Length: 71
Image (cartoon, rainbow, N blue to C red; front, side, top):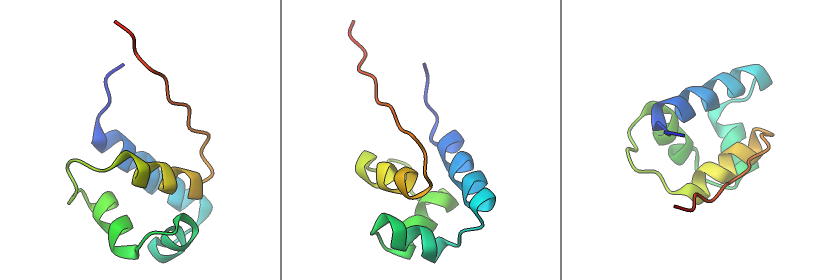
């Protein structure tokens, strides 16, 4: 499965809209700065840290499953 950061960014923005949450509210729930959320959702970050995305996804009430790929 190929992963594109743009798809994740769009998913976060869509979910924020569904939950009617502001950047500040997501940041507070994720225990990160509002600037970090803005950078993730604006595309300023091209190589985001996984732990930050996991915090945001948790704040947006996603069930995240990580799967290892073994070749």
